[in-house]
Amino acid sequence: MWKDRSVLIAGGTGGFGLVLSQVLAARGCVLTIVGRSPERLLAACEKIRSLHPGSQVVGLSGDLSQEADCQRIVDACRTAQGRIDDVFMCTGRSGRGLLLNAGVMEISQSLVDNLHPALHITRQTATDLMSSRGHLVYMGSLSGKLVTPFMGVYCVAKSALAAYVDGVRLELGPRGIHVLLVSCGPIQRFDAIDGKSRYDLSVSKEGLPVDAALAGGGVRLAAINPDWLAEKILDACRDRKIELVVPRQAAWLAGLIELFPSLGRAILFRKTRKRS
Image 1 (spheres, helix red, strand yellow):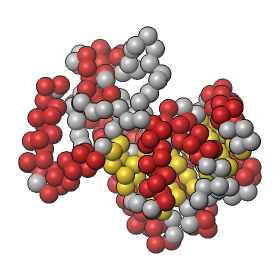
Image 2: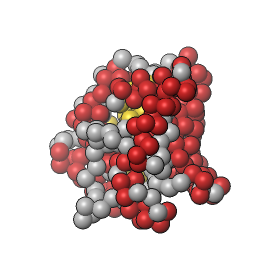
Image 3: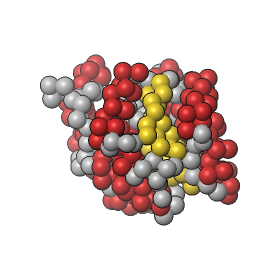
């Protein structure tokens, strides 16, 4: 179902976005991957071509939080590939801190990082995806469903993204576009330097417990294998599911919070209180 489809992957130069790009290249997609750094774009394209000789991949650089850059990138993708069939939004930025210490600027910046790219790319590609009856996939987070210690700002932004995706689905679903939100826990990463977390500085600055720098803010969740997750996402596209929640226990807890708010949040509190 993926062979020769023109796929735009926002945030495809590293982390899970790069893994997903490799999986789609193996399926025969014509790829356009987008990132901020021209150097990382070049490296990502070379890696994909080395792993999958003969694969068709183009790299475009830009700041997806800026509407003008998104317009330029989408236009360039159409020019290079002739059309856009599917879009995968793999952008976003997490963080650590206390919500009461966060000012308007910090929360606004988190929305810029986690919501604005999805907003701009969706608006620019909606017409294309109506024609292809394509897939519009957003990488959200469990933080958009469950609010946990030390990640309040990120939770606000990912909750906003989840609400945006629900609204987009209402408007674009009847027009033939499949809209999928992926709400997942921490994904395995291999970019730590000298065993240090990328959140060590903010944890130290705010005087948070050391394990707040761990994946999930220290909540005990097994890191998800990115190759496995990529296959699950493609399966969800095949079945045109509206949401994929990983791990499944988190979906049950989120549902329990909706049905029985006090009980559900009491369970969540017990699972996180030792770390707050």
